[in-house]
Image (tube, rainbow, N blue to C red; front, side, top):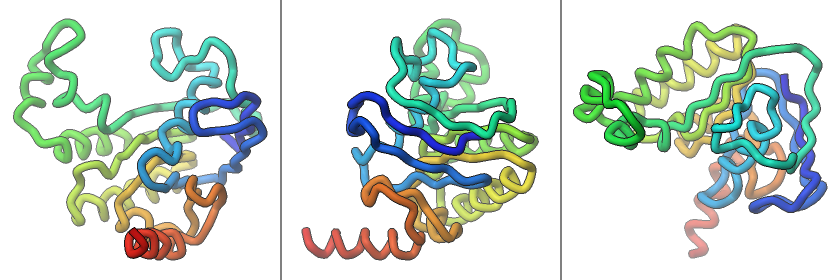
Length: 198
């Protein structure tokens, strides 16, 4: 499982020596668009031994150093925008019946299907980029239940999220706007303050 990441190069929005610690269970990466949530997930994945050469997160040279607890585990990644079959079902080779059915389902319906398939995971590091994308309030509550269930099964989850229902369900979040772990209610309050200032 992951314990920390330290950047050894300036990369995207991160500078040398930028560092973040991770906890067991659910790690919510929060912040406005462009604060580096997806980039942080990419940096971690790009330094992982299980990433294949064809993976878009793969880097020719390491941009960061990872600290783990030494325990071998599986990893699973899903970008709920880019990997959504409705987004890319018509492209990239053979179009299957599954792709065709996906054309007639909403982003939220497809994302819910992916989330249901994650439920049996155990002792894994799970990377989710915007799993709350296009989810209703009801579905966001179900996502919170799933994240809790995954954590209880020994998984570590790193999820970039925006939905207030998801954020407020966990006491601490890793705010990339603040560069540290902060209480979730403090993060949500900061979003309203910034909106009022604009």
